Figure 1 (cartoon, one colour):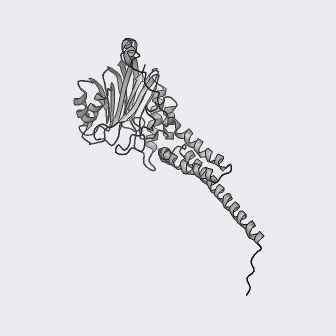
Figure 2 (tube, one colour):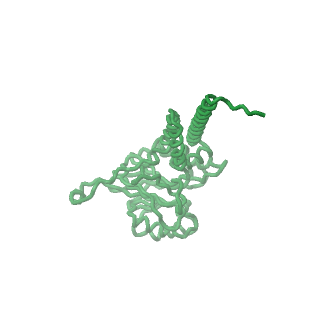
Figure 3 (cartoon, helix red, strand yellow):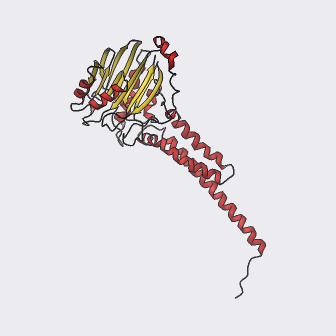
Length: 330
């Protein structure tokens, strides 16, 4: 049988056609991936467990944007414009968490000469010391050495409170604790009271700190844990905390502790309407948990009426949480 070959002109025409079809297929694939990524980012804005889970992963999902943008450029055409959509959505979602503070005011002889006129500052520290870790005293000592004027500790179970009291008695003589949360201060404390925040038991407290430069309302919270199908206790606590703070007439307010919610979690929206979280002193997300390899920032300090100067994290004791250390200026 004689095999008939297509004319050369037909063969040469088919190759560009197949290439064009492959190009269209690749551009469609990039567009689908871009839209899928955008949908995932938007899920992180939805209240509930799915939104909380996605929001926790959002900073890490940014790593996927690099190959997506490379693929969009590689296929040529204007498809790279479509890839900008998830990039913008991701940046909008995580941008506030990644913001960093300007460098503190410089030192030098001039600063030393003007020390008497310098604005007053308070250094706040917060850490979940991990139940039964046995190192609450080590955590407290580390935070004192870091210069903290106000120290908030959570998950104080067993004899952890007594350990912290003993370590802080000399340097931070004013304290108040309820349940498994406590606060120690170098300045006098007043109006101390527990907060149940809708749980029926106390996992939070509030005090007024009479610092030399003025009164500050302080709230310490250890939010309920986030579990699939059982996040309502945490969400209730955070909403109740926001409502209590809304009623606080003090100009200066600080809320700190273990919120069991990532910075991008929609459950923090009610608190963010009243208070703001300082950026980091260095470009980072300031992850705090787990301490061995932090993947999420669930420990926070929110404030109003003060100016953030420094904000960082550091290890203290043998806790599975890093501590938050924040300097605020009057």
